[in-house]
Structures are given as structure tokens and as C-alpha cells.
Length: 240
Image (cartoon, rainbow, N blue to C red; front, top):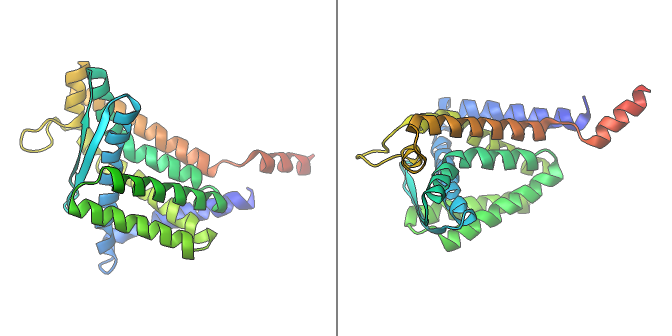
């Protein structure tokens, strides 16, 4: 196993251990809530970004301290509406995949953090429209910028992989929403909206989005852990 791969695996394992331990450490458990907010942010921005990609519009985003959030979008046909609903459901997994891919190398991790800070900063300026959301996203951007400015490459890599692991975990811990017909007070869930737009039961679309999320996470871990071509080439040369 190449040294770079061993280092990446170590960072991944440490991030996973810290993620799993946080809820059980009284002093550090206060960090769990912001990680839930991060998952909400990825979910709702997934709706909004998908809306823009399929030809709809992303008007605004709000979130609250209890972890709830909503994105206001508009679309012109049922296929767009279904895609927008799916975009939020797979948003955390897609974000995690991107972070894993960029976290594979320390120098890439700094670029990934910069892109993430820029993306959230743009969202803050354009679509975040309530006080709590603005405070949280603003602090998140400030934290990312602080790591870029004062942290070294190893700290940047750990930070990126830590966020990737937490978003990956949230795909499973909040996965029950994929099979929920209503999102409280009789309001249809995202999979219910997909069922209305595309026919077939809501649980079918939940299973589809769950499968897509698992595939995205698997791809992200593969990209993160795979050996580069140069490393593989040098290993073949030394063995011959």
C-alpha cells in the first residue's frame, strides 16, 4: 500500500472515530447539532441547485435551530418538480462524494475547502433569507476560511474528510425520511412529491434515491482511497 494511501486511510479512520464518538462525549456533544444543520444545508441546497440545473428557479432558503429547513423553488413541469425533490434527497451524498474526492490529497483538500467556502458564501449572499440561516452559514464560511488561512495542509485534509464522513453518516441516520409520505402537519414529503409527479408509490422513489445515495458514497470512498496511476506504475516497475 502506498504511503499516500495509508495516510488517507488514517485520516478517514480518525474522522470516523471522532464522528461516532461525539454524540457520546458530554463536553463535545454540542458539536452534534451543527452537524445536523450541515446535513440540512446540503439537503436544501440540493433542491435549489437542482432547480437551477433543470431550468427552474431557486428563490430562497431558510433553516431553523431544530434542524428543519426549506427551499423555495419554482418549476414549469412535473419532471422538473420530481428532479428538484430528488436533488434534495441525494444532496448530502453528492456533497460527501465531492468532499471525499477532494480530500484524497492534502493539496487538493485546500482547493476543496476553498470551493466549499465560495459555494456557501454565494448561497449566503443570494438565497439564505432568515436570521438563523444567515448566522449559521456565515459562521460555517468563516470557519472554512479560518482553516484555509491558519491551518496547514494536514488540517485542511482532516477538516474536509471529517465533513464528508458526517454527511455520509447523515445519509443513514436520517434515511427514514426517504420512506415517509408526510413531512409533518400533513405536508407531503419529497418522495410524495416525486410519486405525484412520476406515478409509482412514494416508497419506490425513496428506494431509488437511497440507492443513488449509496452509489454516490461508494464512488466517493473509491475516489478517496484508490491509488493514483503514478503510484500503481511505480509499484509495477519495482516489482519487475
